[in-house]
Length: 306
Image (cartoon, rainbow, N blue to C red; front, side):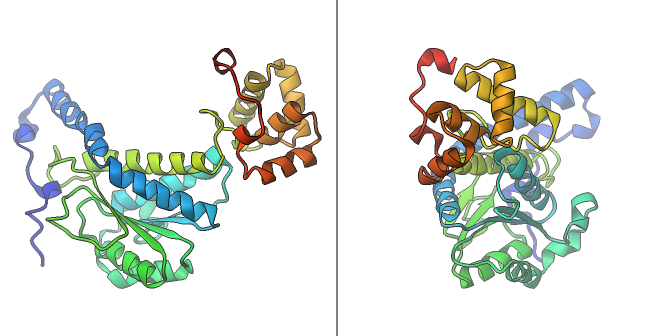
């Protein structure tokens, strides 16, 4: 069995050496202090994260998918980010996909041995019929997970772009992905427990990747969630009405009526109002503009933006 003690994520953290004897107050301070380094560590990987966003955006523009692959916490965070994209961006559920070693059962109950088989990762990629249009994004904070490496190898064989995210330097664990993101969060407060700093860093990176990539393909106007699925629940209906109201200057009642005419589509409602057209013409204009509202709507002034 391989000794992984040399990995940064497996080394003891001197600041928490006596964690079991600390007061609750002091233990809080130690963990909070460790967490404070995460944002800076993510910032240190800016160039590679931006490159990954470019690759993912290009995949979306050509009709491809972003496929996260991971095990344990890494896999769960990938599945979580994928699950949150449709309600946030009204994206097709197949546009961002999360794959976890051990399958859906591993989301609720740890299936640790599932991560040790490269062939299972390769089979998962094959089962999704990955092609050159797609991006396979492997997440393994310690860098060694065979399931993830197997998935990336199969993805490359199929011509897909690949991204690798780890929290150890390349000198400790190498990879051959098109983009290698290394977020160096250092040793964990609880030795080896990458659900902590490394998990927080992973969530930050994945949020950034999908949010910016979705913005780049026209699913955001300014900082507004204009592709929100307003038929999903009352909260999102209210958000859609408020967006239409705030952008158009209509009353809340008028905004709600316009959104209803647009069949719940915020972007269509905004174009209908700005261009004084019906829903079908608004949707045609949006299609011609690649879904980008800023190409259709007049420039908003600072006062209008709030």
